Length: 317
Ligand code: ATP
Ligand code: MG
Image (cartoon, rainbow, N blue to C red; front, side):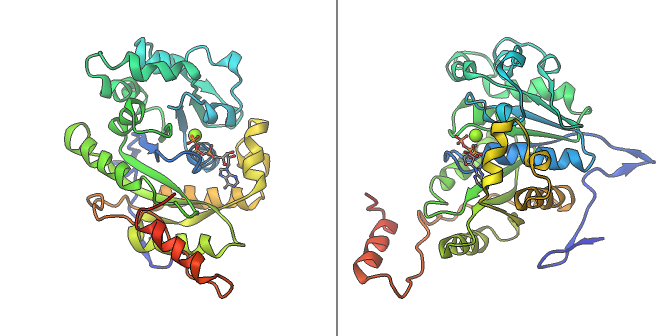
């Protein structure tokens, strides 16, 4: 079987059938990028919802003290009694922290600002990087996917997420500084692979907030594809007002506006995550460009162009 894409990709079933019984073990996927506001929470919520819509059993764990994924899934603060914080620091079972959402098949473990303390509280504790990994072990046969929405940092919460994951999905915003900090993230991934979790794979890059009106968006897509090749999903998430409104209504885009471009893009992404084989190769360690330099447009003046090049060379002001 093949999936439609620019190249024909052979599909391996991620959950192979063993003697007629589906082998069920959740694929644990960290959604991470230490750069803020690139679409991590939006992707965790909407990829989760789109996977659930296609019949998968999905758990989203909010690993960010900002609690944006929890809010986006409509979990109000009164229903955040047992959260990621208690699971990581007080040894409360993850099972007890699970909250159902309004989307069938989609559950969540919410977070609150309390989680900000976990980074410090865990520092002196034994096996502090493996807390999440141990906590979710009993849940692995109850779900098909466990998605971890990471905070915009490379601290202990993100390390716990990477140590607990089979796969890493990195959202990259289609903007000038798209690749900033990515080298550091990939170095951390290699460290986690070496010391805590050799199983971790960089399975995909998701391009987010693509703006059809800007040439820069297209150039970012081309540059990221040039660098990461087939690791970049075909699905590109458009910049869309509907996507940014949906969390305000506590709904994923698939229920808030199921026919919107954003909903379609996240469904396409879900389909790729489901059917595309995970790339079993080392994380690239070449130097990434700090910024993506836009091609000159006829109206761009020479001084403007020189400024852009100076920034690329590291004199960003
Ligand atoms: P943080 O690093 O703070 O956790 P994040 O990487 O999780 O941020 P999001 O919270 O998903 O990023 O998105 C940042 C903001 O951009 C939010 O207000 C969100 O609603 C908006 N946003 C995300 N994706 C899109 C999109 N495709 N179109 C329009 N707005 C979007
Ligand atoms: Mg977030």
